[in-house]
Image (cartoon, rainbow, N blue to C red; front, side, top):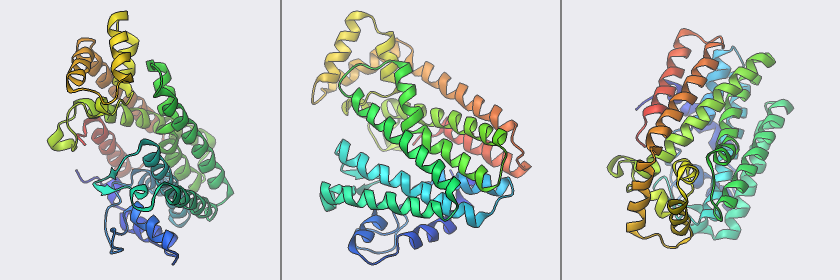
Amino acid sequence: MSLALLERHRDTLRHALSDALSRDPEIFRALRYHVGLEDDAGQPDDGMGKMVRPAIVMFIAEELGGSLDRALHAAVGLELVHNFSLIHDDIQDQDRTRRGRATLWTQLGEAQAINAGDLMHAIAISEALRSGPAIAERLLGATEAMIVGQTLDLHFEDRAVDEAEYLHMIDHKTGALLRCAFELGGICAGASEDVICDLRQLGHGIGRAFQIRDDVLGIWGNGDVFGKPQGSDIRRRKKSYPVAVGFSRAESGDRETLERIYAREPVREEDVEWVIRLLERLGVRDSAAEQVRIHLEQAQDAASRIALSERGRNELNALIEFLARRQK
């Protein structure tokens, strides 16, 4: 699905990312590969994904009458922070592919990939500072929250997790940078603190809905569309939202079985099927869909208080609708 909100400034963002990563040392080539500007042979590529976060910065700044030049540096800084986190996340999870391409650590080794991630973070803050200290300060705060969230997520690998704990974690790990995208656009436009608060609430609702929907797809997604077989997150022993709700609702016997399965490596196919049946019996899939609906309604309520143009409101609603119904 093509969304005007994501497409309007894509070429501008691509060129700005390229400029930020255009230096000669070999490690910069690795950064250009990771963000999707180049393929593994150093040839131009378009593997950057949807770039939701920087597109939101540009969208909000434009809608609220801000400087797009200032917003551009803020958007690039945010996208580079996101990508720095993905480099380290791939190492921690030992993921070998991302968006259909080999992850950076599989090409450079873990030590050099860590260096690449650290360099990308430094460049991100340098870009943010070009938009002003308030932008850099807000981005650093979001980066801190994101890293706290990743730390919590790693802690969850060793124990059962309930719904409240999981939501607290995703508000940091996933939600921090999405909230930041809306806030940076507002700051670039000189918005009042009341408007920034509404933008933050808009990002909060979208961030929760986005992650919960992603977690549903990680268990029940159509493999032909989503690119992963049903139950893929269970095979990875990922304690996603449906599993956290399952832990909260399961009776003692089922809970003990669930804990044993998530302590076992590798997870057997019969275990995957058992977990899916348990989650369906507990009504988890329907509850997750309801949570997506609730959080998107909260996002729309916050959006209704922001002075968007008719075109902007329609484009934002299209993004919200896409997040509610996306299949991949």
